[in-house]
Each structure stands twice: as C-alpha cells, then as structure tokens.
Amino acid sequence: MRIRAFRPGDDEAALRAVFRSSVHQLAVGFYTPAQLEAWAPEAYDAIAWAERLRANRPFVAEVEGRVAGFADLQPSGYIDHFFVDGTFGGRGVGSALMAHLHQSAHARGIGRLCSDVSLSAEGFFARCGFVIERRQEVELRGEVLRNARMRKTLGTAGRA
Image (cartoon, rainbow, N blue to C red; front, side, top):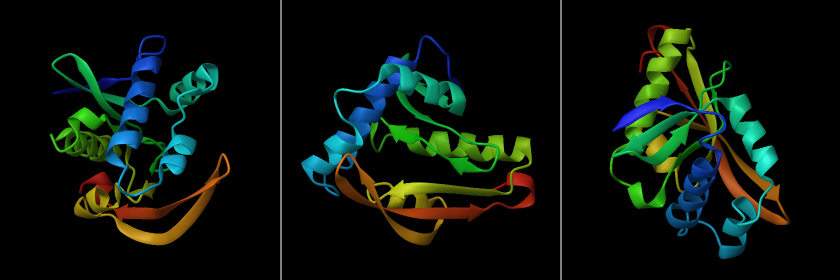
C-alpha cells in the first residue's frame, strides 16, 4: 500500500468513485437506500467536487496501483473526508490512512483531531481512540442522516 498526495486533474473521478462505493457498500447496514443516495448520489456536480478536493488536499491510498481510499486533515485538525472503497473494506486501508493522518498531525503540530463520523465509521474511529463529543442529525437532499462529532486529543504534538 502506498499513500500519496492528491493529484489535481488526475484523481477527482477516482476519488468520487471511492466515495460512492464507500457510502453505498460500507454504510448500507446503517442508512436507508434513500439516505445513501442523498449522501452519495450518482449524479453530482463534478466542478464543485473537484474544487472541494483541491481545497481539502486529501491523501490518497493506493493498493497495487488502484485508488483504495482517501482522507484529509485540515489545519484545524478537522478530518473532512475519510473514505475507503467498498471493495477494500477490512483490508487495512483505513488504518493506514489514519496512521498517516496522525503522522501528518505530528509534523504540523496539530494536537487535536475531530470529524463528523457516520454511524458506519463510528466503531473504526472509536478503535482509533476517538470519543463521541455529540450526536447530530444532518439534512441532505431531503433526507435526515445521523452521525456523531468525534474527537481525539493527541499526545505530544500529534502523537497517538
């Protein structure tokens, strides 16, 4: 597995496919089909998606040359995107991305991580040492999705 920087102009479509696969395959037991489609619809604004990725500058995980997941870490310590392709679920991609985020936090002097975590990812984040700060309900395209704001205080300048 290799983790690399996002490549603007090359990665947008592949990361969108990972996002949709992650939502529709890994979150299927936690949300209704209508909620999943509202969260990751087939039709989307490719320009807005590309702009968001360029702003977030995610890290991209590759397995045997194939994009398997991606995650970002904002200067505030906020993790906006953290998605693993459904076909790579349970194969260590999420753990590798999380370790990379911790290393990046340490290098950047970030001492606290937080994210709005789906019900399907809550257990993974808890195993990584995150705790629930609050439960939330978010309306998206007419559907209400539940999630949790989770946080983790890191040791000395970003160490887990």
